[in-house]
Length: 298
Image 1 (cartoon, rainbow, N blue to C red):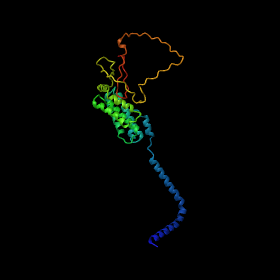
Image 2: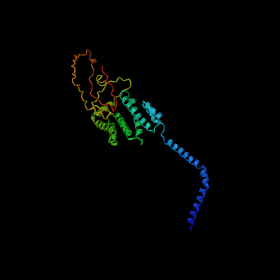
Image 3: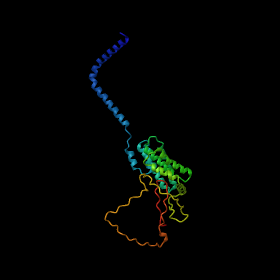
Image 4: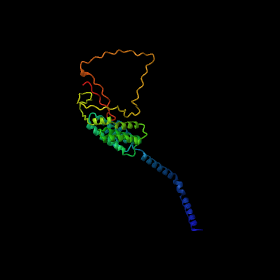
């Protein structure tokens, strides 16, 4: 018999001997050992489960729901920078800064520039991330495009920068169903002479808090520069609304006569200054703002 077979036979003998000697031990402690191993496996499973659980989000979710200002959203984003809630809070911070900027462009131009800088910074923080979803990234690019257009001053550089920002949305998301039509419209409008003239005029205005805000039709010549003509803007943010489609006329219920009304005679006002000024032509304002109410009667 070879050494190999001999060694193999010897190992089997030793293994049988060990099993025979350990049989009483397993008979006495086998059940305890089985329970012990099961307990260790259960503990290990619990540890793994809790390690894989995400951090508690109840408190940060509450803070996000209660946030109203850009500072509130920034605090939530800074507390949870890598969580989905933190990313959403950062986007809301940027959007809120942009909304404040658009509003301040008509009342406080200095504050508007600060808001635009903060909005651009927040949007850029999200743009640089690799873990944001496609819809979030698309909204970030839209925000950056709006910031670029708010900074237009009629110069070639500013107009091209705004147009390129909108065109980037079309390049990155060519099949977008939300912002494609808006981006195409903005690129077309920004290439027009009317748009350039409007932004050149608008950039020279410097409203400040406490100013008596006048529209061109409110004051005499020289008080307020005339506003360049510009077509109406699309309703930004509501891409499915087609403002050019006229509403269907309301139907008159059957057998209901429309009573004739007598038109009262028009009285000539005794004071010419009391007449309401004529409504001016529609003008463009930076994308997304709420126009300042007209001041009449002065």
